[in-house]
Image (cartoon, rainbow, N blue to C red; front, top):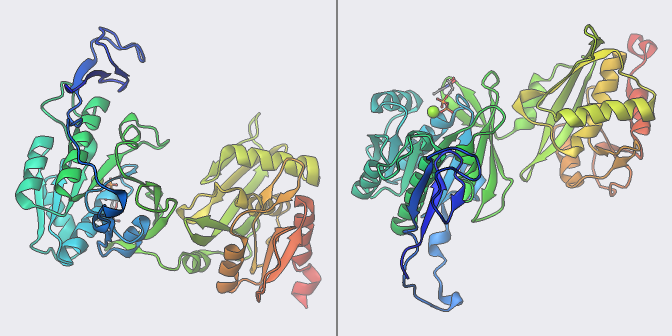
Amino acid sequence: MAPSTQFSCSACAAVSPKWAGRCGACGAWNTMVEHRDLARTTSASVCSLDSVSLRDGEPRPTGIAEFDRLFGGGLVAGSVTLLYGEPGAGKSTLLSQVATAAAQSGQEVLLVCAEESAAQVRQRAERLGSIPGSLKVVATTSVEAALRAMDETGASLVIVDSIQAISSTEERAGAGAVSQIRACTERLVAAAKAAGPAIVLVGHVTKDGDLAGPRSLEHLVDTVVAFEGDRHQSLRVARALKHRFGTTGEVGLFEMGAGGLVGVTDPGRLLLDDHVHEVPGSALGVIVEGHRPLICELQTLVVDAHGERPRRTPQGIDAARLSLLIAVLEARCHRSLAGTDVFASCTGGLRATEPATDLPLALALVAGLEGVALPQGLCAFGEVGLAGELRRVTGAERRIAEAARLGLSTVIVPHGTPPLDTEIAVLRASSLLEAVELAASLVPTVAQVAA
Ligand code: TYD
Ligand code: MG
């Protein structure tokens, strides 16, 4: 069979079997370029499924535990991982540490730096630790040069920083164009499958996560990791969004400091240490990230509106969810936030996007509106429906166990959450109104505080 020919648009990456002067998808002129599907070979050997070797599917640890857990223990030989995040998130720092740790454990590691000079990369790596001899570097923006370096070093781990800065002479489009990024990724994927190194590609995305480049690579690679965190806050969250060799949704947590990224083994403790007690408008929730329950803090600030339209400013919280909860509080709980500006945030760089954070966010809103500080040992989780009902969420047992482990005294949960043998007081509520009243009943009165 002859290699098949396709054309793709270098502006939007749309694929077409025929050449055209103008891309039918995005309307750009003279952007269709020819692709020969070289990956398609004419012969393949057949064997029985139970004789297929499983050995090469085993993950190999890099030595950075919070990174390895994303992949179920480490990187698989021949796999390609895309790690993307906003500029400044700490991708280069993380991978510098991963490269050093893997090299220290005896792996041959190659850093392909397309954005920084080799000297800059050395400076950072030296600041983060001592550099082993088996850590190699090549500063290039050419995929052909990178492939040659991979061949020469025989590296078992290759890091390409970043895929947007790499280009191939075989492509007509400029560096950074979607068709360039895809073509280079295809070449690197083919090299990983053929020679067996694990490859990690760095991709940059903008604030709204929308950059055609890295997103269009998701189906080409085996694993996709989003690396997130506010550059002004120290917590960084790495999330496995796709993983061909194991479970997805696993998270790795790091703290950025002067010595680079440090794995956070007890994030709940970290958060509770930072948690300022007795502040009106704050409530603790329990989210589940990957397989890990995490205590999070929802903070709200409710003030008189100053503009014509009240402001609703969420941070780390879904804007639609915030509006919905404000509407439910008004319609079902007699708490109106009309005429107020509302600021709401999930602290510590975490994101409260799970439905389970509805209840603590609603409690924080009521507390913010009424200027009340909720009791220190209280946390809550549960989804809020439009009728004001509280719905059960998954992982209740794990969430309650985490709250108990961290020494909290009370957790408010949706009615119907199965009974549990635990030292923490579990209060059940069937509606948001009931939960709000329960929380209010736990707030010490002025007389109690004075006594
Ligand atoms: P960097 O890894 O360059 O981000 P990316 O590759 O995702 O663009 O790191 C960005 C930030 O991290 C930068 O603002 C400086 C900070 N940083 C530290 O706080 N401590 C450190 O040890 C290092 C190396 C970086
Ligand atoms: Mg970088």
